[in-house]
Image (cartoon, rainbow, N blue to C red; front, side):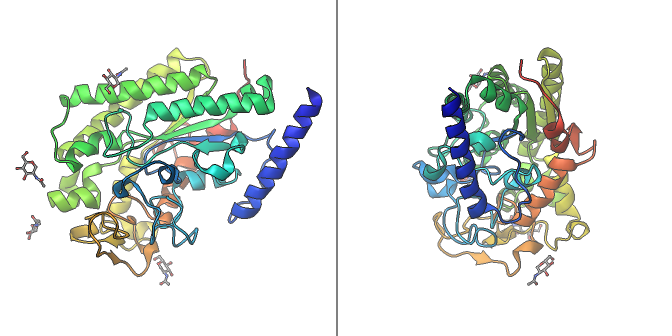
Length: 376
Ligand SMILES: *[C@@H]1O[C@H](CO)[C@@H](O)[C@H](O)[C@H]1NC(C)=O
Ligand SMILES: *[C@@H]1O[C@H](CO)[C@@H](O)[C@H](O)[C@H]1NC(C)=O
Ligand SMILES: *[C@@H]1O[C@H](CO)[C@@H](O)[C@H](O)[C@H]1NC(C)=O
Ligand SMILES: *[C@@H]1O[C@H](CO)[C@@H](O)[C@H](O)[C@H]1NC(C)=O
């Protein structure tokens, strides 16, 4: 129905205008809905923009209290950062408005620019969690709901085009491998088998999105988890040795095997395109040589307590009331004992967006956004 379409487009325009005016800080021109590729975000706390605020999450998996959010949003949005997380910068570079969390009650109609499904504490496996989270399968189900909604709002053809042009980014796997170490429980499978199971579950989700029409995928690979302040405080490892410990070895096994999986998928699935950002090595690089990238402190977190400020007490709501806060957060790579500062996230997002072929490959996100894919 033509009249209905015009009405909906106008509504979308109007609502986007509201989003742009409330959240446009730092954004240049925003593409009109019919021209842009949307951004759909999946994964864990490195990408969560506040979904955990709306589930019954435990304090360990929440960041909706000060000093989270204080340097950029000026309120604790639920992002595990003093400001923005990587997808916020990606949206900016793609000339999209800020991508809202799926569960945010005010934005339920604004999915034409994409939506963020990520949930702090989630992993590829349903059993990876230390409290209620939105696991990867549920994130996929939420995407299915969004796709139906888009079909209703835009019509079948336009929704199909939007879905095929869009970029789907993931930060997943880290929690699967880190949780046994954080909870002091045994690793559930032999190492190689564990990696196969995690990758198997990620692959299932990627293939489902492909079946629904998605073609462009971006992955931030798994970090050297033992180098995070939280695990270094427990293990007391030097920056060189933290990379050799078991959980970091799992991350490396995962990253190598996942590269192979993606190469296979590219051959198997027509028009499947992807980018892998080597977060693992880029994080080590900036931790080792912080001053090269404009930071002063690569190893000690800004917010927390204990060695490396690794005790995850930032904000004082996770069982430890007292915590320290650094003077200048921009000097630090880590904000709390797990998560990057706004400034470090920007650094990583730039590399994910336009990094060279040694850092983000085979495409970077800028190239992925630019690829023309016709819905068929
Ligand atoms: C972890 O578990 C081992 C044995 O299962 C125990 O000896 C050790 O004290 C535990 N460590 C912590 C930090 O709970
Ligand atoms: C997904 O993970 C479950 C454990 O949660 C495992 O039993 C299953 O085999 C995995 N699926 C794939 C395709 O690897
Ligand atoms: C960490 O290592 C340093 C130097 O090797 C040592 O002095 C300190 O006691 C260790 N701390 C813990 C908690 O093991
Ligand atoms: C904080 O640190 C950043 C990065 O080193 C620097 O550019 C900035 O000037 C510092 N701000 C203050 C207030 O010292």
